[in-house]
Amino acid sequence: MGVLVITPSAVAAAPKVNVQVPPDVVVDDAWFNKVEQLEKLLSNSAVGKVSDIRLLSTLDTPIKGLKAVVYEAMVENPANGQRKPERLVLYSDSTGRYAVVGSVVDMKEGKDLGSTFMREQAGNTMSPELLAKAELAPGTGNRRIVLMMDLGQPQGRQFLSELLQRYTAMKSKAGLDMALVSDAQKEINVGAQAVLMGAAGTSRFLPWLAEWLRDGEKASFVDKARLRNDAVVKATLGKGIFAIDKNSRMAVESGIDRLPLIFVNNKGRYTTFKPPQSEADWKALLSD
Image (cartoon, rainbow, N blue to C red):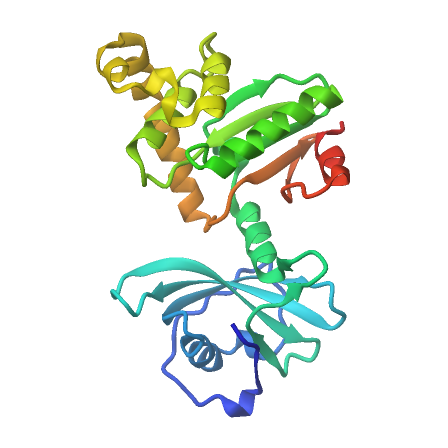
């Protein structure tokens, strides 16, 4: 997507839409607080028809004088007319005169800053205390880590496998919990994660988790015959499906569209942590 720079005078008046400004977000008299300009600007950005805009936050970027402005809005898909909530990121100069629509990429890290800001904002609206969680390690230190993941995806299994290996190698003292979610695209993946969440706190949990990480869809506890005939597996599945549903609904309502999402509770306060990309990142996450 290219970069489009628009001044206020270039945007024609448009019908009003509902813009809500949360009381804790401080903004000046700039374009990002003006309804008509926002509706016209966003609806022309190829994302679809935008309505019910809600300003979430303004955030500093690594670029001097450039702020990220994060919105939540209902966006109508032009292909099928369906509406769904989405997070949108625009950028503003320090005066509030110029709007930048497009991607701002850290070329050294290869990361889209907009995705990073949306991820952080989603984490800020999530309440980890309310998630249904399964304990991976009790921990003996001050830090507790909550991992929101979809283990139905190969990359999710790969991430957790690496994390557990590093956790063991570092002899981390941090407590470790996981909260599983599912996109419901494949029944066996939903079922497997439901079984794992249902087995939390039992002697079956860790062996089944290790089997799923190793074998994926070939894991024995998701064999169709066993799911039909094994009373223990059936009961565990029934218990865990409610946890999967609860976590998945919370993820959708918070606008989370990329996993894993990592929360770190250090001495009673949760913050989000970016997925590690380097040895230093892993040490920062797992050290207590």
